[in-house]
Image (cartoon, rainbow, N blue to C red; front, side):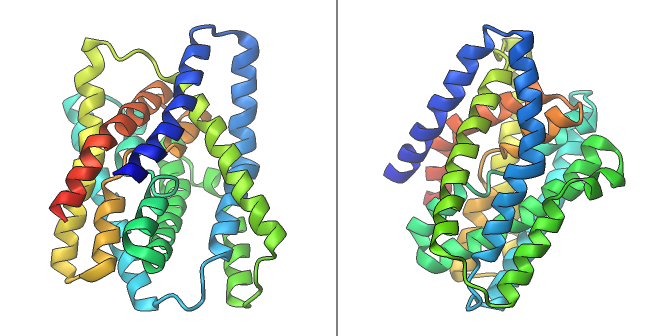
Length: 292
């Protein structure tokens, strides 16, 4: 619980700063945001994926990794079903609401929590889960919000991921200097992305509170119970099961906002769902741990 509070306390201030800046909106700031979104999609996020894939230890249990892949894909598919149902109930376009329901924060929240609770094995399995989610987010997710398969191929993230896989397979160790740079890059990228989320988060009035809160519940509770069901169906136990359950119940991914902003989906909804989900995680994640 202390780690969760520590993580959230480091995240929410950046969202708050962005939210306050958003009350002073100007054309100059909007141009800066557009530029950063493009920079994130073409440089920062691909580099993060490249370093993450490269750093996976070759000693990782292939069978356990395969089970994580199976559950993570299944949870995203279930999330797509929830999003379709949500779209029909609230009469919203699927592309506007799908990503914050389908894709969880599998990196900045999930990996540290899994590392603390389940040790080194839990951390590396959480990294595998994150790689799968990132790949799906920037393939199926882009297809959903853009409506074009070509947009997937235009972004460099898949090519950076392939390069990381090649270096990993070849057994080339990451130099310490690059590892330090990778950690610094991740910290800076997250901080700025969270401020952008806060900047775009609109006040949640009573008229949209039910809609946003419902999306948060579907993302977190829906993700957790879907993972629980699939773990039972496929007989997944031990640390692999714990990692899948915890990670599947995380709030919406920050990348949901980035893609919504880039491809003209409802980025204000995504930003609000991310913000509310982070606050809700203070209650829901301890509840998940209690159930586990």
